[in-house]
Image (cartoon, rainbow, N blue to C red; front, top):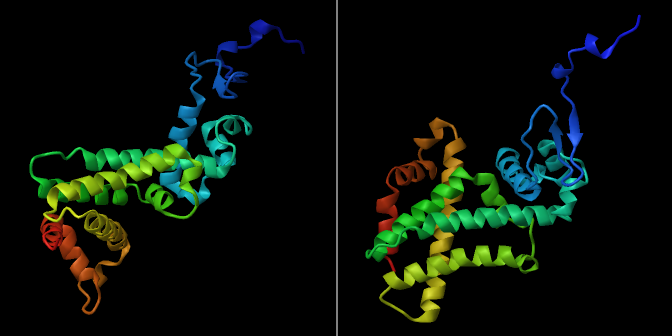
Length: 230
């Protein structure tokens, strides 16, 4: 039996084509194709990190998820650590944006609202937060943009506390900032644990979960008491 081209509905055939410029597979039936591959890869990596955890994120898995050739991501991320660094930069930029939007004349309110925003970010972006503060990226100075993004978070906490504090001694400010960071960082971990423990533990005596649960219901009061100790 012989077929001619008119025997086929060629409009129903969906052919994926590899773009030579960015190594992205796209459908000929879809006229939309963009070439900003790094942004697309990074957006995809952020979603994968939060969905699966950073330990499951690799250049190979990113290529597969993004529907690009296996070699395409290497144009932008030479190693897995490079990829991690880019994801962490985005995380630190987001957390800095979240805490720095409070800039009223009430320095105590700025501290409290900034701390709450920090904790909220840590709870909402748990897997990205783990990458940011874990040991997968050992030396931030290898990545100047990462070092800057991470340090500006600390610098904002320091400047906000300095406005609040009556004691302006530099060493006191530095040490107090570490106390504050340790407090809110620790609260992220405790509140994340509270989210997954069985309900029966919340009311069980001689465990910390009842107190943690009460704190979670009124973070403002808890943080106000904490900052008033300085």
